[in-house]
Amino acid sequence: MITQQIFNGLALGMGYALIAVGYSLIFGILRLVNFSHGSVYAFGAQMAMIFIGLRFGIIPGLIASMLLTGVLGVTIDKLALEPLRKKKSIPIASLITTIGISNIVTNLLIVFFGSEKRAFPALFDFGTLQFGSIVISATQIGMCAVSLVLMLVLVGIVFYTKIGLAMRAAQQNPVAANLMGINVNFVVSFTFFLSGISAAIAGSLVGSYYQIVYPNMGFMAGLKAFAAAVLGGIGSLPGAIIGGLIVGVSESMAATVLGSTYRDSMAFIILLIVLIVRPNGLFGKKGITKV
Amino acid sequence: MTFLYKFESFVSKYRKILLLLMAALICLLPMGVNNQYFLTVIVKMAVYAMFGLGLNILTGYTGLVSLGHAGFVAIGAYASSLCAVKLGWGFFPSMLFGMVAAGLVGILLGLPTLRLTGTYLSIVTLGFGEIIKMVAMNWIPVTNGTLGVKNIPKPTLFGMKLTIANYGLYYLVVVALVICTIFCLVLVKSKTGRAFQAIKGDELASVMMGINTTYYKILAFVLSACICAAAGALYASLIGYVDPNTFNFDVSTLILSIVILGGMGTIRGMFLGAAILIALPEVSRFLMVYRFVLYGVILVVMMRFRPQGILGWKSQLPYQLSKLVMKRLKTAGTEEGGENG
Image (cartoon, rainbow over all chains, first blue to last red; front, side):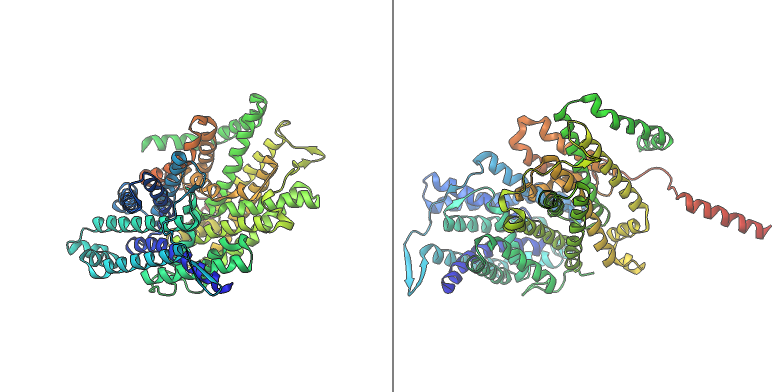
């Protein structure tokens, strides 16, 4: 029973890890917690459902939703956040802006698609595997596999490509990066594009895991993924994976041990403990200003 | 901005007359309109202005952005209405109990969050709001779970039931709002208020100036929580029913929107912010579905074009020292003059 829950939690945690990566990418480069990320994730899931419903096939549908969500991320950056950076506003201003954007995106989704839960097709419909008493569904394996591949791709982009080098440079010192001929605004937009894509993939995977999507799905998932990102050390990609897995496992453990009404509070308890004990997270670098 | 200067000097010149006029208007308003729906909206505005004043102490003056203030409102509303319903307490002791409960929770929340700044603090408060909601949902023996608390009695004063119909509730809320406003005005001018503003301006510098930032940040949390809890108790008795979903994240965002729209760090702004944001859904029924979109748009647009809020101007008048300081300066001046002569 416990082992079963651990496996369920691992699959779920991979979904959280994918969302957490989006937070980490943007936090790394802008030192900004992008509150709109949860709503972008819900948008991605919703778009995936619609495009798959158009019957072009599952893969083209997913790709279309990924691109569209990436474009949404870039739009958010260009319309709302870049002007604030140009004005050199206080950090709180961008934080509040992202809260506002999250409100706008979620509620526009509700206006256009209704707030009810809709069925999402199962992406990995290949039955289940059984090891003794442990049942693992193909969806869980698929989720883990896709997440791992995506993580590897992201790590590859960040550490082994030219744009990744530019991202890391902009992360260390935006002004110096600009002087070296890096278009920092382009790099930031690209980061938003990447985080949008990973959010769309996470949305599709989690949507196919539960087989439902709804506009408000991003709120809780976004918060839990944020807890995961903080736990792993926000800004660190491996940290996001480990954090996501820990949050996912502890959530499904809490659901069995304490009862299902407590599952949503696990992430917050983890978040509070991490912030009190070790605000830099497991893999984080020093640098959070503590006064 | 000469217009602003003219306006401000006009206001400060005729301050007493304007205050009297406003007091008369507020007192006579219910007789004048005599419309229950309209009065309910006004009372709701006043309660939200109180929420705004509460959050403003924390966000506007101390610079700590809280995204979970609905949690404090919920504590106040639940504690007071449970005391009233289950223990049969009167309204005022219940409200006081709610304020104390929220204040204690404010200390509890303030303590761990002191290690954190900016975004991290906001996230923890957000989580706090959600945890309060979950406690309200799961602590069924006390809070009655998702069913909520029903039939919350209206406050009574000297045996008279205060309702909207006999204007009692209106006057009660107005008195509470006035007390709250005066408290905030005094607080801002006091040593404590100055410490809050110093922390917002530059925390490191205020530590250097000998301000105990830990103490003042917790104090800001507690005061903010108490005001919101008091307003929450009023709100509960106004709508007569609370359940966990009455105080969700949307309420927290709404309170934050009030503070930002009106002007962070101003008292006047809270009234305008609450008036606009509460009147908005009432006058724009046709926009109903877009209402929450509009809240988001307000946040984004305000941050982009006027981060200080609609009424967030800097005073153009010469800085006024308090009377006590002026008196001391005068006596010091004459003494000095005497020595020289």
